Length: 474
Ligand code: GLU
Ligand code: ZN
Image 1: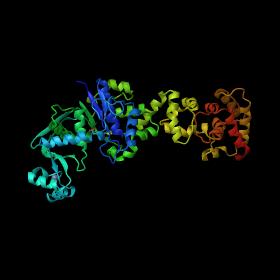
Image 2 (image 1 turned 90 degrees about the vertical axis):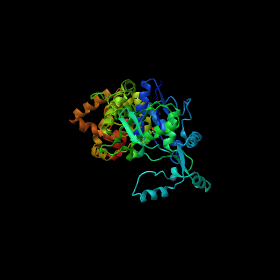
Image 3 (image 1 turned 135 degrees about the vertical axis):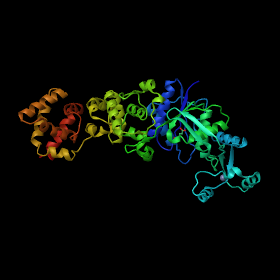
Image 4 (image 1 turned 120 degrees about the horizontal axis):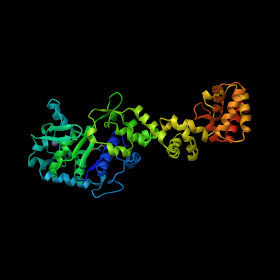
């Protein structure tokens, strides 16, 4: 049997970290088992699904390195992989469930259902009202043109059970499951039907998803059975993601899109490594895993049941680790869009030169723009820089002279000369170097000074010091 897993995002926006974790675990498991990873886009809700959201979701998965074997793009023999392209199939399946007596039309409006519930003292769910309609009542309602949804007829008196790889045996009595809607009155399929049918048609063998979907599982097992399936896939429901205060992460959707971490300068290796640890562990000590190592070591059996707390400090710690490991050229390419977003028209070769100076200082790539801005733009000194510059006119003139006459423009030569000047004037290093940093970079935060000056070049260095001594600083 070939293992087949899937990720099924609903593209109403970008991929959320919860979905990204599900995608990662499904991908890892498929890769490790020599199986197939399927991407299915659950875009049946036309109001929420946009083309932009669709493309954004694909882009996020690509960024994480989770390539799919079947789905939009590569295609595959079990398509379509966008649910919006399978509406006819869902309708046909609904019709055949009605013909085989597993489903029926429900003419109740939401108000009617609510009113009956209230009369029964706040009962939950659907009361099966239309299940009991006579043929005559049914055809009259149909003729009257009343809109109707289609509900699945949940069998009485059964217990639906499945062995969840993470949670063990899960049992649900069918008395706890009301007849649920499989087709809305506008003819569109519900998630329960669409995903249930797709999992069946796509021969998905392992359904890995968030534990918020546990209630869907017995319903989808019943649907499969009614649609003639003889097997049940393996289920693994992943623990809830919570924030540092234990609240479900999905409540703060906006800040937990994978895209927003990317924009804030997290590397995809750090993100993948971090997501892997959100619910899974290898042992108590090892925290750093590349994607390849994860393929080797991951196992669903080591996924825990307890809620997994999203800890941004740990993510930053991992990010720092991966930034240090990144080649300067690669880091420069990563920094290009981050600089662009900060309004800096950077050059990749200059970023590559400065990258080795930055790696030790960055927890996130978005900390880089303030440190490199001076390499690409004239910078007016900020408030702190101005304070340091006050009264330094004479000293800066001496600096200017010293640097003008340097035989070679290297960090070492610059350093030697400036240290010499500092001792001539009996200045402590900080007193000597902060004004130069302020003059040239406009800030007091920059990469190491001498290397920065080398990269900036003699011409621009002198010109910036000169423009300050020429006027602003007394
Ligand atoms: N579209 C669902 C979601 O984004 C996935 C449901 C499933 O995995 O069955 O949560
Ligand atoms: Zn009804």
